[in-house]
Amino acid sequence: MTKRADKVILPKFGKYLEYLRKGKNLKQSQVIYKSSKIKNGCRISSSNLSRYEAGKTGDPSLPLLKTFSIIYEEPLENIIKVLMEEKYGVDIGYEKLNQSCIKESGPIYALQLDEINEMIRKLNTNGLFVLKAILRGFGTQKEFLAD
Image (cartoon, rainbow, N blue to C red; front, side, top):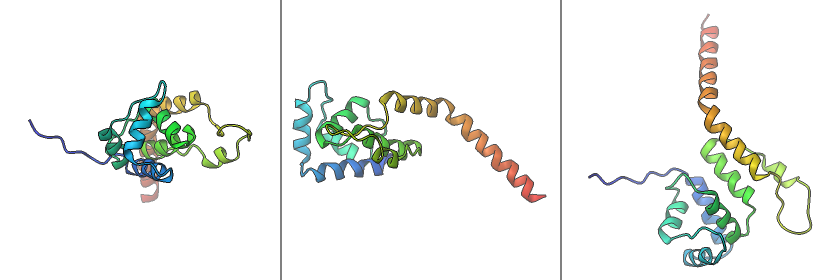
């Protein structure tokens, strides 16, 4: 059996998680401990945290993202935004997050989780059709310019 080489899949997202952790002056061991204390949270192991921060895994679960959000006191939408930008190439509008309705208590949430899930579902189901249409358009443009 051949050993699978770890591929760097989401390096920017990994650096972002590391940035959040260091911004809170937390060691990896402290993040691991805090994750075990969050009710209905996702327990994070040292190997998983290292892999995520190194960008060597590409499919973080929603409970894991929520756990990072709680530990790093970062709005879940910001974490999902960075993930979606790198993984899917979709910009969900950081400016919209900053300009959303201001509440005096709690973080600002401009997008509802259902909307984000719908965007991901559409990307997964329609992504190939859109890519094919774009490539077809490039082919047509190339033929047009060649004439």
